[in-house]
Image 1 (cartoon, rainbow, N blue to C red):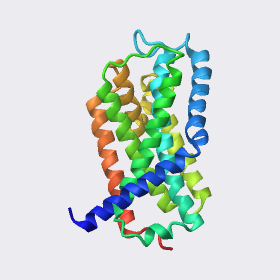
Image 2 (cartoon, one colour):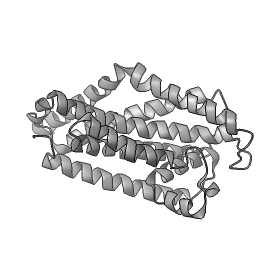
Image 3 (cartoon, one colour):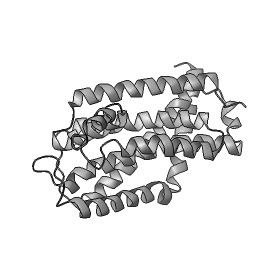
Length: 259
Protein backbone atom coordinates (compact mmCIF):
# COMPACT_ATOMS: atom_id res chain seq x y z
CA UNK A 1 0.00 0.00 0.00
CA UNK A 2 1.13 3.53 -0.79
CA UNK A 3 2.84 5.06 2.32
CA UNK A 4 0.86 8.29 1.83
CA UNK A 5 -2.41 6.39 1.78
CA UNK A 6 -1.38 4.41 4.85
CA UNK A 7 -0.61 7.64 6.66
CA UNK A 8 -4.00 9.08 5.79
CA UNK A 9 -5.78 5.94 6.95
CA UNK A 10 -3.80 6.08 10.19
CA UNK A 11 -4.74 9.73 10.60
CA UNK A 12 -8.41 9.02 10.00
CA UNK A 13 -8.42 6.18 12.54
CA UNK A 14 -6.63 8.38 15.06
CA UNK A 15 -9.21 11.14 14.62
CA UNK A 16 -12.00 8.59 14.93
CA UNK A 17 -10.46 7.23 18.12
CA UNK A 18 -10.12 10.74 19.51
CA UNK A 19 -13.79 11.49 18.75
CA UNK A 20 -14.96 8.29 20.42
CA UNK A 21 -12.85 9.02 23.51
CA UNK A 22 -14.23 12.55 23.60
CA UNK A 23 -17.76 11.39 24.39
CA UNK A 24 -16.76 8.24 26.27
CA UNK A 25 -14.73 10.10 28.89
CA UNK A 26 -17.90 11.99 29.88
CA UNK A 27 -20.21 9.01 29.36
CA UNK A 28 -22.25 9.90 32.44
CA UNK A 29 -23.41 12.95 30.52
CA UNK A 30 -23.32 11.67 26.94
CA UNK A 31 -24.66 8.14 27.47
CA UNK A 32 -26.30 7.76 30.89
CA UNK A 33 -28.26 11.04 30.74
CA UNK A 34 -29.97 10.28 27.37
CA UNK A 35 -30.87 6.79 28.61
CA UNK A 36 -32.46 8.28 31.73
CA UNK A 37 -34.39 10.79 29.60
CA UNK A 38 -35.79 8.00 27.43
CA UNK A 39 -36.82 5.99 30.50
CA UNK A 40 -38.66 9.02 31.88
CA UNK A 41 -40.53 9.41 28.59
CA UNK A 42 -41.47 5.74 28.76
CA UNK A 43 -42.66 5.93 32.35
CA UNK A 44 -44.78 9.03 31.75
CA UNK A 45 -46.33 8.23 28.38
CA UNK A 46 -46.55 4.48 28.98
CA UNK A 47 -48.26 4.91 32.35
CA UNK A 48 -50.76 7.49 31.09
CA UNK A 49 -51.65 5.96 27.72
CA UNK A 50 -51.12 2.20 28.10
CA UNK A 51 -54.83 1.46 28.64
CA UNK A 52 -56.11 4.11 26.24
CA UNK A 53 -54.11 3.71 23.03
CA UNK A 54 -53.94 0.69 20.72
CA UNK A 55 -51.85 0.92 17.58
CA UNK A 56 -51.11 -2.59 16.28
CA UNK A 57 -53.07 -5.74 17.09
CA UNK A 58 -51.47 -7.63 19.95
CA UNK A 59 -48.98 -4.85 20.70
CA UNK A 60 -49.37 -2.81 23.88
CA UNK A 61 -48.69 0.90 23.76
CA UNK A 62 -45.59 0.64 25.97
CA UNK A 63 -44.11 -2.00 23.68
CA UNK A 64 -44.98 0.19 20.68
CA UNK A 65 -43.26 3.14 22.34
CA UNK A 66 -39.91 1.45 23.07
CA UNK A 67 -38.54 1.21 19.47
CA UNK A 68 -39.53 4.84 18.87
CA UNK A 69 -37.64 5.99 21.95
CA UNK A 70 -34.63 3.87 21.02
CA UNK A 71 -34.47 5.33 17.52
CA UNK A 72 -35.08 8.86 18.78
CA UNK A 73 -32.11 8.46 21.13
CA UNK A 74 -29.95 7.15 18.28
CA UNK A 75 -30.78 10.10 16.04
CA UNK A 76 -30.45 12.87 18.61
CA UNK A 77 -27.16 11.61 20.01
CA UNK A 78 -25.58 10.98 16.62
CA UNK A 79 -26.40 14.56 15.65
CA UNK A 80 -25.18 15.95 18.97
CA UNK A 81 -21.82 14.18 18.77
CA UNK A 82 -20.58 15.41 15.40
CA UNK A 83 -22.10 18.90 15.67
CA UNK A 84 -20.89 19.66 19.20
CA UNK A 85 -17.40 18.31 18.55
CA UNK A 86 -16.87 20.44 15.46
CA UNK A 87 -18.28 23.69 16.88
CA UNK A 88 -16.28 23.21 20.08
CA UNK A 89 -13.07 22.77 18.09
CA UNK A 90 -13.86 25.87 16.04
CA UNK A 91 -14.56 28.05 19.07
CA UNK A 92 -11.60 26.87 21.17
CA UNK A 93 -9.24 27.16 18.20
CA UNK A 94 -7.80 23.67 18.32
CA UNK A 95 -9.25 22.93 14.89
CA UNK A 96 -6.04 24.41 13.46
CA UNK A 97 -4.19 21.21 14.36
CA UNK A 98 -6.48 19.26 12.04
CA UNK A 99 -6.27 21.86 9.29
CA UNK A 100 -2.48 21.55 9.08
CA UNK A 101 -2.66 17.76 8.90
CA UNK A 102 -2.71 15.94 5.53
CA UNK A 103 -6.15 14.44 6.21
CA UNK A 104 -8.54 14.46 3.26
CA UNK A 105 -12.18 15.51 3.49
CA UNK A 106 -13.07 11.81 3.27
CA UNK A 107 -11.01 11.12 6.39
CA UNK A 108 -12.72 13.96 8.28
CA UNK A 109 -16.12 12.68 7.22
CA UNK A 110 -15.39 9.07 8.15
CA UNK A 111 -13.98 9.98 11.56
CA UNK A 112 -16.67 12.45 12.64
CA UNK A 113 -19.63 10.55 11.25
CA UNK A 114 -18.23 7.20 12.37
CA UNK A 115 -17.83 8.40 15.96
CA UNK A 116 -21.32 9.94 15.85
CA UNK A 117 -22.74 6.58 14.75
CA UNK A 118 -20.92 4.80 17.58
CA UNK A 119 -22.38 7.16 20.16
CA UNK A 120 -25.88 7.05 18.69
CA UNK A 121 -25.96 3.26 18.46
CA UNK A 122 -24.41 2.85 21.91
CA UNK A 123 -27.02 5.10 23.51
CA UNK A 124 -29.79 3.34 21.57
CA UNK A 125 -28.59 -0.04 22.82
CA UNK A 126 -28.54 1.32 26.37
CA UNK A 127 -32.09 2.62 26.05
CA UNK A 128 -33.28 -0.73 24.73
CA UNK A 129 -31.62 -2.74 27.48
CA UNK A 130 -33.11 -0.57 30.21
CA UNK A 131 -36.62 -0.24 28.75
CA UNK A 132 -36.99 -3.98 28.11
CA UNK A 133 -37.74 -4.30 31.83
CA UNK A 134 -41.00 -2.40 31.31
CA UNK A 135 -42.64 -4.29 28.43
CA UNK A 136 -42.18 -7.39 26.27
CA UNK A 137 -40.58 -6.79 22.90
CA UNK A 138 -40.18 -9.19 20.01
CA UNK A 139 -37.78 -8.90 17.10
CA UNK A 140 -39.54 -10.03 13.91
CA UNK A 141 -37.05 -8.67 11.36
CA UNK A 142 -33.72 -7.84 13.05
CA UNK A 143 -31.93 -6.96 9.81
CA UNK A 144 -34.47 -4.22 9.09
CA UNK A 145 -34.01 -2.81 12.59
CA UNK A 146 -30.22 -2.86 12.22
CA UNK A 147 -30.32 -1.29 8.75
CA UNK A 148 -32.48 1.63 9.84
CA UNK A 149 -30.49 2.18 13.03
CA UNK A 150 -27.20 2.35 11.09
CA UNK A 151 -28.58 4.51 8.27
CA UNK A 152 -30.35 6.82 10.71
CA UNK A 153 -27.23 7.27 12.83
CA UNK A 154 -25.16 7.92 9.71
CA UNK A 155 -27.60 10.47 8.34
CA UNK A 156 -27.83 12.41 11.60
CA UNK A 157 -24.07 12.24 12.08
CA UNK A 158 -23.69 13.78 8.61
CA UNK A 159 -26.35 16.38 9.36
CA UNK A 160 -24.55 17.21 12.60
CA UNK A 161 -21.37 17.72 10.61
CA UNK A 162 -23.19 20.19 8.35
CA UNK A 163 -24.63 22.03 11.36
CA UNK A 164 -21.20 22.17 13.02
CA UNK A 165 -19.63 23.59 9.86
CA UNK A 166 -22.38 26.19 9.44
CA UNK A 167 -22.62 27.34 13.06
CA UNK A 168 -20.14 29.90 14.35
CA UNK A 169 -21.31 29.83 17.97
CA UNK A 170 -23.28 27.56 20.27
CA UNK A 171 -26.43 29.69 19.97
CA UNK A 172 -26.65 28.95 16.25
CA UNK A 173 -26.11 25.26 16.82
CA UNK A 174 -28.81 25.24 19.52
CA UNK A 175 -31.20 26.96 17.10
CA UNK A 176 -30.49 24.32 14.45
CA UNK A 177 -31.20 21.56 16.95
CA UNK A 178 -34.26 23.17 18.57
CA UNK A 179 -36.01 24.36 15.41
CA UNK A 180 -35.08 21.58 12.96
CA UNK A 181 -33.89 18.38 14.62
CA UNK A 182 -36.19 18.37 17.63
CA UNK A 183 -39.48 19.09 15.78
CA UNK A 184 -38.69 16.59 13.02
CA UNK A 185 -37.90 13.95 15.65
CA UNK A 186 -40.99 14.49 17.80
CA UNK A 187 -43.29 14.70 14.74
CA UNK A 188 -41.98 11.46 13.25
CA UNK A 189 -44.30 9.02 15.01
CA UNK A 190 -42.22 8.25 18.08
CA UNK A 191 -45.23 8.50 20.39
CA UNK A 192 -48.06 7.68 17.97
CA UNK A 193 -48.98 6.09 14.66
CA UNK A 194 -49.44 8.61 11.85
CA UNK A 195 -52.65 6.76 10.93
CA UNK A 196 -54.20 8.33 14.01
CA UNK A 197 -53.63 11.83 12.60
CA UNK A 198 -55.97 13.89 10.38
CA UNK A 199 -55.33 13.47 6.66
CA UNK A 200 -53.42 16.77 6.34
CA UNK A 201 -50.96 15.86 9.09
CA UNK A 202 -50.59 12.35 7.72
CA UNK A 203 -49.47 13.88 4.43
CA UNK A 204 -47.12 16.24 6.25
CA UNK A 205 -45.61 13.35 8.20
CA UNK A 206 -44.80 11.55 4.96
CA UNK A 207 -42.61 14.49 3.97
CA UNK A 208 -40.48 14.00 7.07
CA UNK A 209 -37.58 11.56 6.50
CA UNK A 210 -37.37 10.98 10.26
CA UNK A 211 -40.80 9.32 10.08
CA UNK A 212 -39.42 6.66 7.73
CA UNK A 213 -36.49 5.99 10.05
CA UNK A 214 -38.78 5.47 13.04
CA UNK A 215 -41.36 3.43 11.13
CA UNK A 216 -38.76 1.23 9.44
CA UNK A 217 -36.97 0.59 12.72
CA UNK A 218 -40.27 -0.27 14.41
CA UNK A 219 -41.10 -2.66 11.56
CA UNK A 220 -37.99 -4.62 12.51
CA UNK A 221 -39.59 -5.40 15.88
CA UNK A 222 -43.24 -5.98 15.07
CA UNK A 223 -43.21 -6.89 11.37
CA UNK A 224 -45.79 -4.19 10.70
CA UNK A 225 -45.56 -0.47 10.06
CA UNK A 226 -47.40 2.51 8.66
CA UNK A 227 -45.62 2.20 5.28
CA UNK A 228 -43.80 -0.52 3.37
CA UNK A 229 -40.26 -1.01 4.77
CA UNK A 230 -38.76 -0.92 1.28
CA UNK A 231 -40.28 2.50 0.75
CA UNK A 232 -38.86 3.64 4.08
CA UNK A 233 -35.47 2.17 3.18
CA UNK A 234 -35.43 4.01 -0.15
CA UNK A 235 -36.30 7.35 1.49
CA UNK A 236 -33.80 6.96 4.34
CA UNK A 237 -31.05 5.68 2.07
CA UNK A 238 -31.61 8.50 -0.41
CA UNK A 239 -31.66 11.10 2.37
CA UNK A 240 -28.44 9.71 3.83
CA UNK A 241 -26.77 9.88 0.42
CA UNK A 242 -27.85 13.49 -0.19
CA UNK A 243 -26.81 14.71 3.27
CA UNK A 244 -23.47 12.87 3.02
CA UNK A 245 -22.69 14.43 -0.37
CA UNK A 246 -23.47 17.91 0.99
CA UNK A 247 -21.26 17.33 4.05
CA UNK A 248 -18.39 16.03 1.90
CA UNK A 249 -18.62 18.99 -0.48
CA UNK A 250 -18.54 21.46 2.41
CA UNK A 251 -15.54 19.72 3.93
CA UNK A 252 -13.75 19.66 0.58
CA UNK A 253 -14.27 23.44 0.23
CA UNK A 254 -13.22 24.04 3.82
CA UNK A 255 -16.52 25.80 4.45
CA UNK A 256 -16.15 28.08 7.53
CA UNK A 257 -13.14 26.08 8.70
CA UNK A 258 -10.43 28.62 7.93
CA UNK A 259 -12.23 31.84 8.81
